[in-house]
View 1 (cartoon, one colour):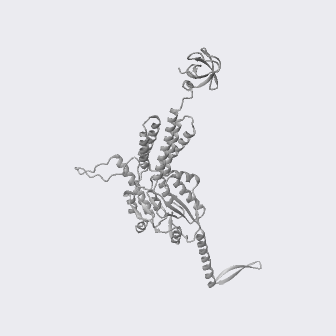
View 2: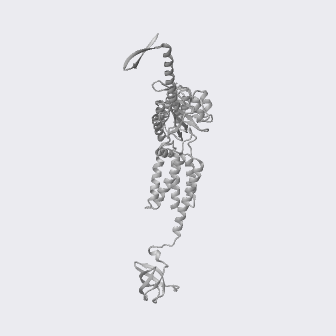
View 3: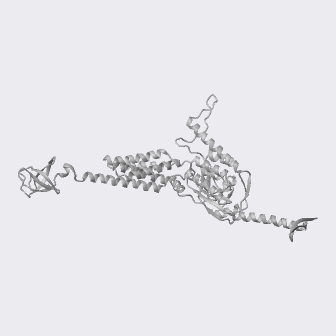
Length: 470
């Protein structure tokens, strides 16, 4: 059997024939070249990387969504997410899980570094990634939703004497609805990625946590890795499924890492979602506003206090704040302010310090996310700052009360001057560089004699001779 091909010879189209045994090597060579080209292209594709640290908030969700678009623009073969979070808000977490489940490129969530964790909302983000990995010294779980102003839902109510189930209070009903919603969401995410749905539900309902090794054994995450390099080596050759039932093979061994940093706005807003920063903002807001109230017209302290208060409101919206703690901090500020007005001999200051320390300790709801707490160092420094500030204010107030009056009628008493004319009894004197009409209080005063002010009646001073004993 011979195959025909066309060649151009001397301006005429002629048919030539090739043996079949010559076509097979050519076809295999073409297929091999195409395969090598695709492999080379995959191997040369970079791995995009971002870091999600701290509380999950609105800037975190925006950062992840932007990074997915940027990684796709860079033609990255996957997006690597280094995750270390104690949790965060529900709405941003939902946006992040939706973005990961619908990502057009593979995503890898890696709980890192050693000692890190993916708690609460971080558990959802980890399970939503195409590939989930953990450092051996990390933990995951504790995904029970936190509802502010209400306690966690109690256990099921036992039936009454008639055998009917007791209805829980309305607040408990809302807690259960929230818990059921998050438990269902966790199961759906785990099922979509082929992970352990039963564990995902328990992480929400029972706030269970697990070590990295336990998470791999229970099929909560896919693999363990000792570092980013080890992770890329273990991901190499892994086949993953993308939306639309598309498949992709990762070629990450030796791939180039390109980190996508957050924008300055994203970094600034994310910094505000920190318990320590929130406490500092509350203290600065209180000090600035109170200083402005004590000194109307100072302007700058009031402006700084107002800005800090607005930033603190953003932080409180991004963090699970215990508003009882905020109330105690505000009460401490009022006690410090009262110390300036009321001579309590330090009792109000001591009460303010105690109220501030307790409020700072209660500021964050740490029952389900222990990492979201204000550090003791910040509490002590802020308490000392408050005490020093108000000691300065109180000291200035005491000095002002003890200082001799310099204005008005009282300010003129006991001032000394010189008689410009004889006072018998009226005349003119020079006091504090000014000429005054004066009346001699006790006998006549000679011209040029030193006088002392003993009274004032309108614009007329009452003086006596400086050497007079009366």
